[in-house]
Image (cartoon, rainbow, N blue to C red; front, side, top):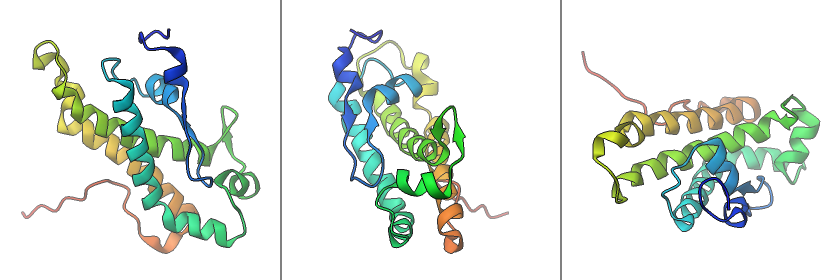
Length: 167
């Protein structure tokens, strides 16, 4: 058992990606992004898979540009063109993980209010629109970083939602 009460093998499971983008582990999402332990494993897995799909779709032009340079994986491209590392992990790999995990957390936190639990006030921060927007913006900022580096003419926004206010 892990500290969350979930079997270690369940939370350590990797989600196989498309072969270009790296595989991501459920356990990393749980530990690095503090997903509430009350979620069933399938809820977390579905949230992570949906985030992978959404981020991969947004990064399709980045993937196409890298493949056009004759690289078959992000890791292959990163090792040649972007060797910068943080904590022994390639910076592009970290950007991708953060984009996906932040998107997954944003989606999962909005589901928290459907669980049986103590009074709503205790979980207000987990469920607030500001919290969701923060994680969506974190994800979109990482996506923008990929575009700025690999497809700079794309004019990709760094925020998940742009707002216009009339004065």
